[in-house]
Every structure is written in structure tokens, then in C-alpha cells.
Amino acid sequence: MSESNLPAFITFFQNPDHYDHPVTEVSLVQTHISYVLIAGDFVYKIKKPVDFGFLDFTTLEKRRHFCEQELLLNRRLCPDIYLDTVTISRTDSGFAFNGDGEVVDYGVRMKKMPLDGMMADVIKAGGVNRQTLDSIVDILVPFYDKADCGPEIQKFGHAEAVAVNVLENFEQSEGFIDQGALVRDQFETIKKYASAFLEQQDLFADRAKSRVKDCHGDLYSANICLAGDKVYIFDCIEFNQRFRYCDVASDVAFLAMDLDYQGLSELSDYFIKRFMEKSGDSGLLKMLNFYKCYRAYVRGKIGLFTAHAPEVDEKTAQTAIAAAKKYFILAEQYAGK
Image 1 (spheres, rainbow, N blue to C red):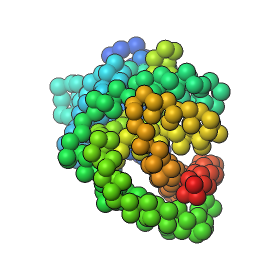
Image 2: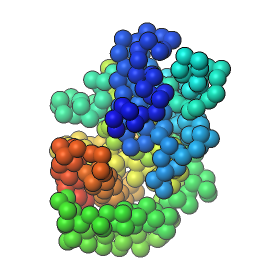
Image 3: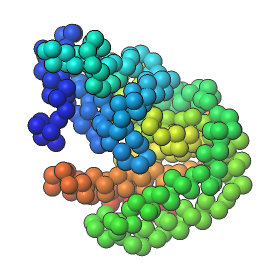
Image 4: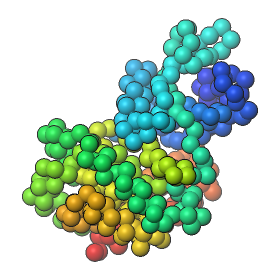
């Protein structure tokens, strides 16, 4: 997106002089759903007014609500990172955070984490080891123990509810078959495996009794920061409960799949082993490949969406296609186990 297409307040806050704390430069990072302003010691995350079906940020009130949800839910794991919500107000000189003028949008203010500690980059540098995963497990086990459950959450773990998420992926990706990343045989193999596994209704129902919780929903290396002796697990799913209310196995399978994807299968196996030992969840193994397959397919699908987005440049598109192809190969491997 060119600067001329940015909201006026985003352009305004790209100027370091427009903050009430020390800022020497401002970096703007965009995702398909957010503007992220990195300014001095703080990060401001503002939701784009978009509707993708599975999320809807199209009104000011909805963006306010989901900013509040983002703060509340992420404080479960990062209470010292997620600071507060902010209003963006119009002023005589432009805009202000938490000003007295007309509110034009809302955001979440966070403490900036060390960029060199992002787990995806640490993996590339060869810095992730068993001790790293021990630290992550030590955070996750009590998190899941304390996480909300109950009938309204547990129902999302039944086969019928899980099928909504899993089968939706095939519907959304079928139109991309034979366009560089996903071939018909892979698609059919993975879909057949997932559909057959979903027929085990008793298995899903049994897991739902005690292992379906209000989880993180997006647990992989892009949302983990390794800051010295601190581990921050951030950016959980706040915009749709059906992606966050899930079997704990689905949550941890995402990180295990991510490690497999990065060529760290031994560490992936170690992570699952340690998690089962600490949590006492030996039944997780029955679900592991199914949820790894689901998570790999989702990442592949997102790669397809990115590659075919009209605003994406050719280099980004080719990188996304290559990643998607690798994810679909991985999903097919899980489907064959």
C-alpha cells in the first residue's frame, strides 16, 4: 500500500515528533489485518477496517471491542507486554493518542520486545535447543491448566465443530490447485485423510471433556519471543472464538509442525514428549498428526492467499508459493502416517 492510501492518522504517526515519549524513528509494519507502528520503546497496533468472513473489523465499535479482547486475552501470557488500549483522536494539529477530540480509531499499546529475540529468527541462527523448549513447556502447561473450559468451550472440540474449520480449508484452497504449490493428488490425499479422521466422533468427544480449552490459537515461532531468560508468547487469536477454543493438542501441534517445517524434527519430537510428561496428556499422541496436518495445510493456504493477492509484488508472491508448496508436502506426509 502506498503512503497516499494510508489512513491519515497512520501517516501522521509515522513522524517521530508526534509522540509524547522519546522516538527517533518510526517503523510501519503491515499485515493483512493490522497496522503496526514501532516507535521508541513502544508498539502501537491498529486494526484495519476489513471483513474476511472469519473476522470483521469494519466498524469503529468492533475495532474497539477487539482491541479490548486482544489486551485481555494476551495478558494471560504477556501481562507486562500488553500495556493498554488507546484511542486515536482528531486534534487541531492532527491526531493524538488518548486525546480529547473526536475518536477516529482504537489501538493496543505494547512494550517493544527485542527484535533479535523473535523465535523464527533465532531458529534460523541455530539458537533454539532443548532448553528453549523446556522453557516454553513450563509456560504452556500452567497456562492450559488455568485456561477457561466448560460446556460452551468444550463443544468446539467435538468432531462436528472441528470439521467446520478443517473442511473450510479445502473449500477455500481448491481453486488454487495446479497453480504452483498444490496439486490435485495432494489435495485429495489430505482431504480424504482429514475427512476419515473426523469420523472418530467418540475420540473427539472424549478429548472435549477435559482437553478443549480457551487456548492461544496461533502458537508458532512467529508469535514467540526469546528475550534472555524470558519467553513471551504473544498475539493470540482474539477475533474468532472458533479458532481459539480448541483441543490443547491443536495448539501444541502448531508449534511442533513449525519445528518440523524448519527441519527440526528431533526438537519437535522432544517438545511433544516434554509437554506430555509435564501435562500428563498422553492421549495427545492420538490427535497429533491430524492437527499437525491441519496446521500445515492452513499455513499453505495462507501462502496461496498471499501469493495471489493483487497488491503483492512478484518476489513476495514467489516466496509465498515456495513456502506454501513446502507446507502442503508436509501436510501430505502427516496424512500418510
